[in-house]
Image (cartoon, rainbow, N blue to C red; front, top):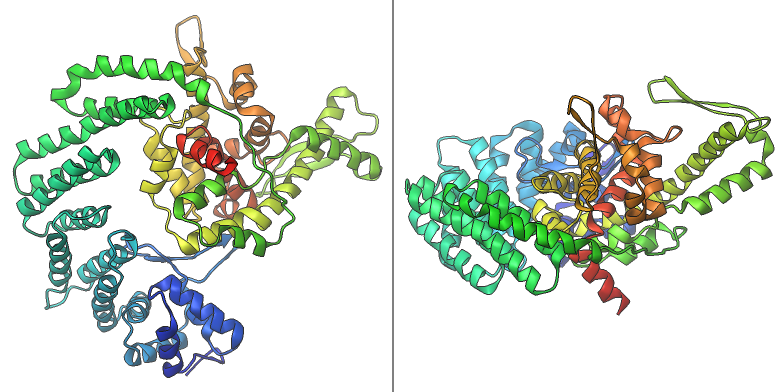
Length: 589
């Protein structure tokens, strides 16, 4: 069998290779196939590597496999890239190879490309078998992702047999088998699926959720406790016991207060401040708890006064000339949280003083470059600015010219940072881990830049970046960070609003906010330059205004500037958090 003249390995060769793999999941197989491709180029191992490297997103029914990476107009493979001959070649392997993970991926891809119901049913059964093989309560996502995809695919396929019911029965049986003896979230995710599909013995399942929630609460694992109380409430609604469901919601809300108090007792006012905000928001949604909100607001205000002292400026130097292989080596094998925290401070922000010196020296060394004015155009061909000629310029235009050359040097620096550090680090992290919203929320909890009610938006912005979707990420991130900076001013006692003679209020724009002495002191020269240059610079990308006015195409969000800006905003958000503080302290020791 061949694909565009490149044969796939024989079925026997694939089977033997799979037997050698210590990790029987997609990423383990992909790593094995990549190694084989290096040893035996041209034998089709590379195609197998590409297919098993898809970004597996079981929650996305229409597109469960995205590209592993995407930069500019280039991206890694997705199922739609496979032609008919390749699909037929994979169909032959589906008939011959028995490994569950292999059959699940290949059957699913054939279903997506050809709507082959037989292949889909094979995939559903294989997903359940692979999920069972991977079941590990302390490393639960691989198993649960396969169960989730099996459930969603079975519902799509339908047919005379109750395939969906069979999958859901299996998931329910696993929940009842463990009966709450689950140290993490396998049971919680399974219960969320059963609740979504409205399947199972709801009262029994709600009882399991309640027991885990109560034990987690007693152990001080409040985030886990909330997750179980929340799904318990959903199951009790399905069981038509609204009073018990409301009691579960109240217990979930109360854990925010308990966590805030625990953080205060541990000496972290910054983290406590975040949980007091969460508590107030949760109490507002529960009528029986609203009378306690004034008390919580006082606790919030007290915590707010103590948080600024906990904020510190931290930097981490690396040699950005290191090869991509060195970056990948540094991130390979890290635990998920450590990898994300390391990524946040892995690259150095641009030093504007040093950049200015480099720009002036370049202008002096190459006078012809600065002897003429330069027009600057956006991607649609509109002339948006002019960098003046240095020769004969007055002081104002001389500064604009220097600013233009600084931006030029900054673009080069950012390009190197993305190509040599940020993109390789991202690829390595995502090859080994799935960064989900729950992980992000846990790490940015306590950030001073996250006002009340904005946590879900910032979590989404960061999580979408870790899925290479910088279009969605930046549309959320840019305005929320701008608001977060104003929130920081408000916490310091400054009012970032103008009030006219009629009492109408208008909030400060980004440029005025960044020019404020308090913000400049708190953020430091490097952050201020990066934000001004990337978001609102006269001669720079000006992403903030271009985004707000709809001037950016989809391709604009696939380039180096988009990834770099997303990383800068991610770094800004996570720096004033207990998580990054603990990480840096541990590294210094």
